[in-house]
Amino acid sequence: MQTVGQRVDRGGHVAYKARQTLRRTILGNMLRRAREAADVEVKTVVQATGMSQPVVYRQEDGIAPVPVEKIPALAELYEVTDPETIAKWTKWAEISATKGPWGPYGNSLGPSFEDYADVESLAREIRAFEPVVIHGLLQTKAYSEEAIRASDTAITGPRPPAEGGVETDRMKLREARKTILDRVEPAPPRLWVILGEAAVLTPPSVTNKTAHPDQVRHLLDQGEMAATIQVLPMETGLHTGLAGSFSLLTLDDNIDMIFREGYHGDGSFSDDPDRVRSYRARYEQLISQALSPAETRRYLHGLLKKLGS
Image (cartoon, rainbow, N blue to C red; front, side, top):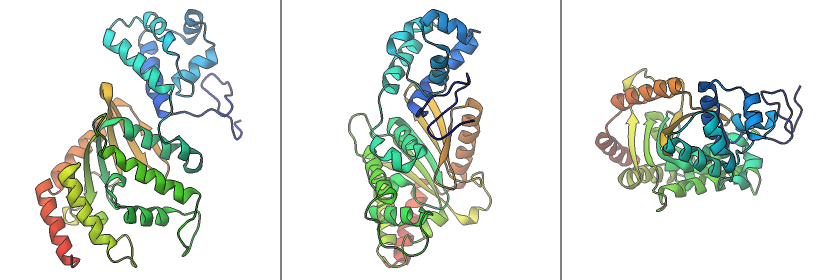
């Protein structure tokens, strides 16, 4: 049985205060698949590397980092001779030994918020479907404030803006995330977002009358400079995104991941190739059902007129 602060790995060993990180999980999955493909047992890895069995399990589960100096021995043991693969393992061993820029917010926001922001910052391509809210990278500050306040289910009823704590940290993280679209090195990710029409039509605030038109104008600006944006009209009817929002993230070395956001703000990742292919097919179908980028711009300009702006 697990208790707070503990984690039980696949070997049945308790790792106190351990937590999976996506950086470590990416490498761990590579190494586990290579070991299984080579039909090598964990006890053989222990004998060849001098690492303990619990450590090997925790590395493959993304809980413990893999020392860079162990990569050559693992490659030899798994009969991996391709220089590009070995270089990829080495690079991810270096990456997984470091923390992302979002660490200061992790304790109050929970691991999935921190992990998503981290993978987002590492991605070279992001494809996202958001049926009811504007994607976080495309939100104005005012929209983000209202969205975070609305999703904070820990406190109910009307309340003043938070002076600190989770809500403030979420806002800081949201604003920090947006900076990846303006960075120079590495190049910003290619961002493609499909928004449900409900996301575009829903005003972020009933009191701040400028928040809605400001958000629509921001989408037009971002569509020119930083993203490909499509709106999925309600008149399209039922579609392949009925299960809710999701993101497809492509990292260097052609690493593909899916993120599904949960109801309570948590979420789950998967790099299973079959699931990635399934969600890519769903996304392609959504692209074909949505307004084209040019049609979306005309739609947004028309909405601005209706909003009196």
